[in-house]
Length: 119
Image 1: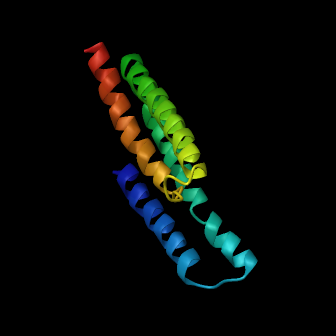
Image 2 (image 1 turned 90 degrees about the horizontal axis):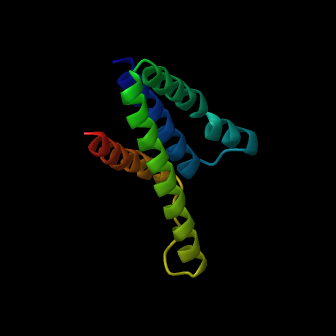
């Protein structure tokens, strides 16, 4: 329950900060403050996820670890390839905010692969 509440609040702050930065003219210090406003919520989310993972048994921890490794590598390779395609002007500039969503999807794929491997 706490995770979902924190996720909703942190996501709201993330979306709000993006909206403000794209639609409201602010001075340099204010823009930096708005840009950094999502940091505490996202750090809290990371801490909460790590705490939950540490409470799992060793097998489930291993499955999650492999899922994170797969997601990390999938994201790294995809960003690397997309960067080359951007340099070649074959694709438009990519909004880096979508990388987080890609990482989440990659984690689901990695979890499925890892779970199936140990099934």
